[in-house]
Length: 366
Image (tube, rainbow, N blue to C red; front, side):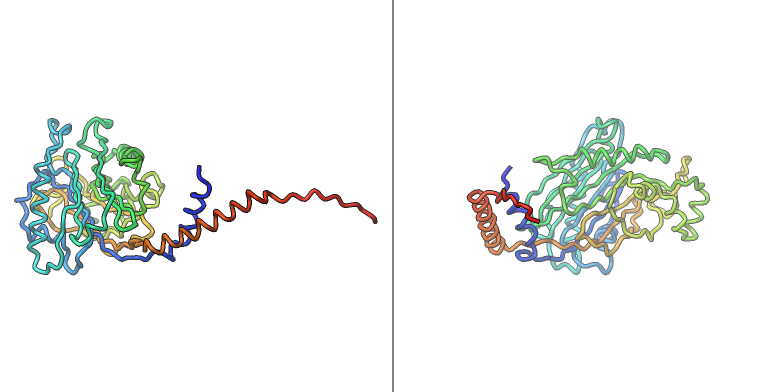
């Protein structure tokens, strides 16, 4: 315990506006359950419909989240094979380099994978020198933490003086398994850990993008849900959305925000078509694929989906504006010196003079 140092830190924080400024940046975040599909199943033009929506500007950071990057078979749930991730990385980078309106180049800052769940972080190449403290970690939740078929991949970084944590996750499947999904969230949130004990909550800005597998509940029938989608009655369906219901009670993602959902459910489609599931299981359409964010300096500008049809899911993306804190080191050091001298002087005076105690006695002459 160092009272002088703690006091200096506290006072320095209160004067932050004197030595720092805000730098606006844009973050593109997307999530796609690939259903094991390989990159060659998509043309570069199709992929760019998701990565580079019409009318969007060049993002500074791209957060690309995949689930089921490999087929989830019983033999594979304990093994992470990075080959598919590498192929997707190559395809993504090639597509970005070939875009006609290219102004900036991107580099893969970091990527990681847990069986079928993968996270890839791209940044503009001219940003790299200002990015530090980059780490990746994973957390298994399948088979009570023994298997990686379900779980999370997270990457953290510091850009200038603002911290970011990006998480992709694949929660428990099944229409009725709401509590299992809630438990997956809590396990990841509480137990996912970086070096030096840092957790998701250690960061100022957090973005989750994944297949959280929450369904449309409320006792709505399959026929009713499908007809509501046709009639574009999303309000009725969202009122029965399991994730929104559990967020409203703060069972999961307390204080997190999600953009308004104005697009149809993203799951489950017959591959290659616009038809919802016609298999024997006839799964009820659902918004399984979501993006949530937390941070005072994050502002969502776009939340939508792309019409890629190679999987039984549609990919989702969000465009988020952020304000990054940029510190002027010279000014900060000068203020630190000033504050330290002031605090030290007060402490010396206190030690020399000590507390002033009045031991006076008054007589009542009245």
